[in-house]
Image (cartoon, rainbow, N blue to C red; front, side, top):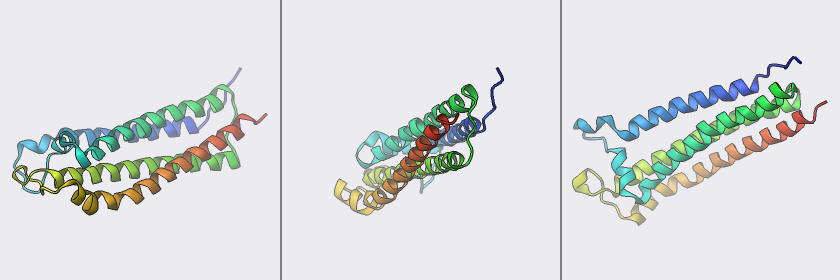
Length: 180
């Protein structure tokens, strides 16, 4: 039996590879190789995570990006491989358009929402750190009003975009799997 080579599994594998590269860069920035240099405008991301409070957004965004962005893309590739490679059903027409929507919206939604969460958490952790440590010494209320509150709506919007992509992919998956 000859199986049909599909394109979607490979696309999602490459998306997982690119997301993994982005995660690697984020990891290097979080582990902070720059902390050994005295850079006046730079605040250590590891200190942001360790300090808790608003800085936990950085850690939460990072972990969510690893799970949903990197691992989620790799697992999604398995779903597409199952339909295309195992069952030999090719995505075409509407199901192909839905797969493109899944690919684009999920990757953009996850990447942007988690990047905003990480950046907002970094700023919040820096603002909450003691002035003697290079922070601003803000309390939780000031941090929320001045930093985190500005990121809530865009993060939520991009998470909804990612969810819409996953829903489109699910609909396309059902359509493709029902092909005869």
